[in-house]
Amino acid sequence: MKRHSLLSLLLALVLTVTALCPAASAESSSKILNKMKVKSEAALLMDMDTDVVLYEQNADEQICPASITKVMTALLVLEHIEAGDLSLKDKVTAYDDCWFDLDMTSSNQNIRPGEKMSVKDLLYCMLVASANESANILGEKVAGSISAFVEEMNQRAAELGCKNTHFVNTHGMPDDEHYTTCHDLYLIAKAAMGYSQFREIVKTDEYYVDATNKSQRRHFFNTNALLSNMKYRGYVYQPCIGIKTGTTDKGGYNLLSAAEKDGKTLVSVVIGCRTKTKKDGSVEYTQFSESSRLLEWGFENFDTITIVDEKQTCGEVPVTLSTEADSVAVAPETSITAELPKDITPESFEMVPSLRASVEAPVKKGDVLGTLVLYLDGKEYTAVNLLAVNDVEASALLKRKAMIADLLSRWYVKALIGLAAVLILALILRLTVFRRRRRYGSSYGGRRHGGYRGGRRRRR
Image 1 (tube, rainbow, N blue to C red):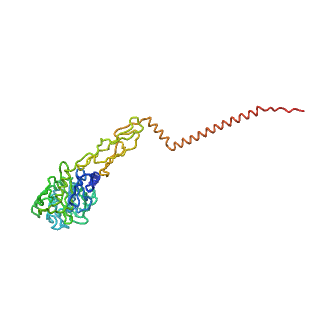
Image 2: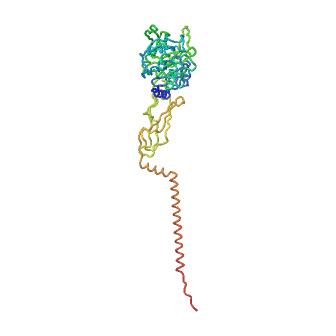
Image 3: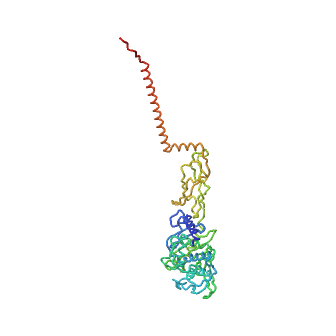
């Protein structure tokens, strides 16, 4: 699956870098965030268009995904269809081991060994009715064996950026070595939602499978009560477009759901929900009520705002070596926008610029002259470079003076100047002494020669 590795890496990177919303688990200046608490062991709400975390609760803790596992199984099947390895119309014969590690008490559509069904119908059985044997049949068809397919599941999870996920089967039956996290489930779900066929299947409320060589016509309803009233009444949520339920006796009730409203697509994950008996004796299935509540909370309480505008100046930096200007204004490299609770405004942020003490001309528009750090609730939120907003030309005269001053300030130039000074001084001293000696020597010799009055000795 190498063709997906770059996209997966970028998706994981985008998820890491753009999840700017303050975590709901920490105390925030937002009352909207502080008041929200999901009745589940773990939860996550993401904006799928921006990869922004709107809410998280134990979202990186290991959980048992149960039948939500089938989203990964479906993703691999659709990727192999895209690669041309098979098609939705292909007929698949159920293998002898299609019930491997399963029994009739687990979720199924009673597909028997030797039964022939199309890939499309098997996908509907798996994603709408949550048939476990269908997952095994598809896995073996794609990879040749269930074990090989599971290995491919783990490889694909790693490519998607999943940090804490490990699969041991195609369907999600409980196993201590079969686990994931809310964040990892989101990565898998987003990749799967990229396929129109997947979106069409997971939003289907009921489906018919024509009679096969071993079965009468099948008719089943979606296990997701946000889409269908057939099994659980009173939970239908109109904006819902999927995705998958998952239930285990030990782990409780799970739901991975998505909804579209007001131009947004949100993805919710709730894990480990429990049933609640109401005063009237009826039972509330909180995986559905909490999911729709979380999704609606996300739609109603968040706006995308501009915290910092790239046209907004954030100070000035002194400029030297120019007669054109003595400073240059700076502005953010890019605007900073974020999806935030409605009670957090640009004024909620502390903005701390860090600028260079000065800069020498010439300055070019776009030169990085500092950074702007944004703080929210006392913690660093994000940062952006501050750039010069215009050119500042240098003065040729000031530039030459500066070059000379800089040259003269260098140690080796100072040493050479010092040495030259010493040599000049020595030369001056030598010339001075030499002249004195010459003058003195000339005067003494002349007096002695010119003053001699010697004469011949007289004879007696």
